Image (tube, rainbow, N blue to C red):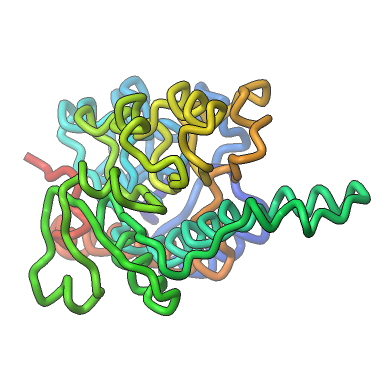
Length: 327
């Protein structure tokens, strides 16, 4: 009998065909028709051997209904869509696909840096509205060249940002609870500094930290008060790392120059009436940093490999992918 994988996400036909083509024999995928039909999710998870979690939340009652579930697999790395306390209570291990999204997210972070600095979305909208604002833009646009870029968190994504920024002739600093070795710092041409120094001295601050109880709202009014008025903030990690109300105040009052955001405190449905979306010094995208068709095979293969290893190698998960071990 084939092992059943419940892919708890709704993808279009092209993506489903690509994902299905990468699956080994001996496994089958079941998918919901809706992202929001909780009763359908409960029904499908009841006889699933494995589950793949994207952005739809995996709740305690779903895990309670999953009597056959062997492993929870995150499509990516962030675990905030999974009730980890319930997974631990029900003794269901959790695996992630470490590093599989690092390159597209790093590219997106740099794209936001350039978009905010050069006001690209504003210029595009102005031209489409019939305005040619070259002279108006000159006092408002900045280069990356020669600036200090501070990375808050320097794991897989942060290191890929540093690697790709090497050609921009910037000075790079980072803060992380786990400091890299001197050899790695030299390899990435990046200097370790305290979080306080990074925030006070960086021209660009790019967040690549993990969301925990300790890091939630780490960027608040007090943190924005430390930033240079000419500095910009980039967040491609998790929205709740930033106090969104405090960010709106900082942008509205021009206490910082701008922000580029791919993630938000509330994402679905997002608050289209939020003042954030009226600010010309904010560039926003709908959590799409990792959403690249040519990266789908990498992430999918990484997730499937976690399942194959667990099923065929006595519960083995690559240590870097193991987020919660079975007791």
